[in-house]
Image (cartoon, rainbow, N blue to C red; front, side):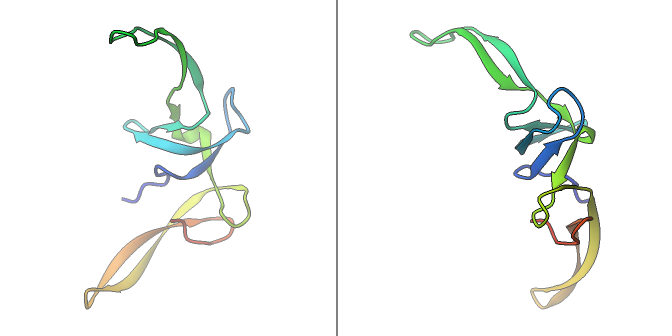
Length: 111
């Protein structure tokens, strides 16, 4: 199965305290959660683990559920749903079926 949202995708938050913010997906975690750059910021207390390292309070990104974000269409720059199209492609002299992610609004393939 092809993942609808992958790391490196540009997404927009559609629900929650950070509604309207955009960012790139840093990591995709199990149980349908994502870490998005600049979204869902929380304060974390950090202890100095080495001699000379600074301890204090640091802002880090917390995971957000994938249902609360939408992928941004590269052509229209608007949030869009993601579909999957099965194509036949010639590779190494053989015809193989390949699943490709497609933006529903514009119909363009996603990288």
